[in-house]
Image (cartoon, rainbow, N blue to C red; front, top):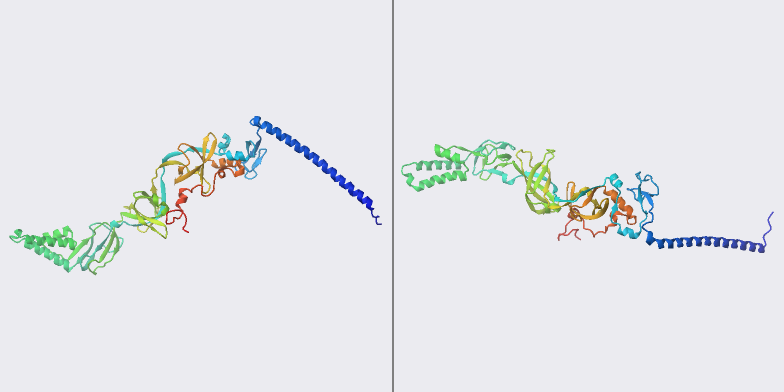
Length: 467
């Protein structure tokens, strides 16, 4: 059965009752909030009144954090939920004010932390550090030790003593026998001049002596006969139809351009000879390394044909022209090759040793690279470290040259620097801590020399690309 509708008077009374109940609840809530704010305000005033006198005596809270993940903070000991490392106890507030962040420049470690993280320091020392420039190259002939044997006159090759390429020959070894009508006539003229000189009264005639001297010089200078060959003709007063010619150097036959029975003319190339006891190696050096190289710098090379074996030489010449395609300069080096192991056209890898001036050096492990800047941690007092911006120079093996930012004798962190960095991040979380507290704005810090050298150079010599 449908309930009778409420009268307008009853509905009005109910609405007023609900409104009064809501107002009553609101007043109760506001009264409690006012009491709490008043208590907080009084506590804040009491804290401010006493902070100046007893801030040093205020007890510091203890908390636990992970050295590798400073964002992990706990009020009790345990393990890091990220990496599982044991949390390290800290004293002080995990929250740092903006004023404190601005003055934090050092990080202090306990002795236990230093031992566990294997933090080790070493002194920055001043010494000479050498640079090694690597390059690739090709073995070639030493130009002064290469010669071509050519025909001095027309004739016919009667016999070849050296008849194949690659043969090893010695200086003075017979190469070929040759018949020439011109040479035969010159020899006969020399014999006739000798006979005329032997007639009575010829000693007093200067013209006859001049004829003998001219004939002798023609055989040795124009036709290339040796002193022994000329002396034999002079002593025997006989003429041979063929004459033997000898090698002018000791070396290897690189080319043979003649056959037995072949007629040749003046200037015909017969043999190409080279002395391979000394070779040249041309290295391609990048333009960024060219400023370090000087003549007489020592060079070491290695070839794939002889693993584990090193050959030593020196720089003898630097080309004045840059190869535009490869952006390299050809550097000529000279090597002794008495063993004959270095063959022409063989590829090698070279290291050019560049002595450097004395400078402050530190281990390469002490450098923390942040992109455009390099930082080392310096122990300013026992177990207290501060970051230091440095400018690096030459890198040689495990040592790095420091051009600016360190002084000789300062103790730098050689290992364990990342733990110190984690501590630095924990001390200044608002700014990212550690290395990021320093100015990383591009342009404020010049790039290291290695990075600057690698930039392309425009026509004015400044870094960067042409527009």
